Amino acid sequence: MGLAAMAWTQARTPVDADAEPHHHLILANDQVRVFAVSIPAGEETYVRHQHNFLTISLRDGRLVMWAEGSNPGLVFPVSAGDTRFFLGGPALGVRNTGAAKYQNITIDFLDPQVTTYAYQYNRSLGQASWDYGSSGALAPPVDEHSGFAHALSLRRAVVRDVRLLPGAELAPPERSANELFIPVTDVNLAPASGRQLKRQSGEIAWLEGRTSALINRGDAPARFVVLQLEARRD
Image (cartoon, rainbow, N blue to C red; front, side, top):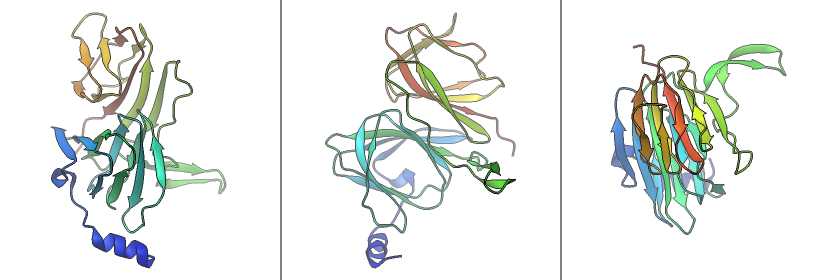
């Protein structure tokens, strides 16, 4: 570790998300802790997540991000809907270098088997072994007009970044699962008959055992992330 990085690390003490003033707990159960994160321009967070976690950006922005033991320097542009998985353990720092408030939804997974660690095939070696997946991020949208549903497998969970065009539908899970919906835009979803799921950006919804498709009843494309979680087996 370089002297500059060492000095930076010593000057800051990471805290748990519960104790960090930019993090606000909005849901907690036996599978997840969900935080609404809001970082004004020029401010930063330095948080140690004891569990693996996922972040979903709700706004465009510019961030400096650094892992514990490293010196912050690179600026990363982020877009609304950017979804990224992180392994718990090392502290993560985030500084908002943009001109506007940065907001995201951060999800702590209480099940350690929600991870990119899985049985991977290494083509260069011609063999398979247990290892971490090559990417913890969902691919960005192909364009701004089409519908899509990009998926990231996390062993005991699946994350889907979805854009539903008006009248399009999202099928129910193939197997019974709990689902966390995170709207990136305002959404107006409803089954063919049943209770409407109408939320503004960032207003999450927790659904259990959904068995029918959800249809976009709005007049505009609906962008949201849906997290499907297997029931825990302790």
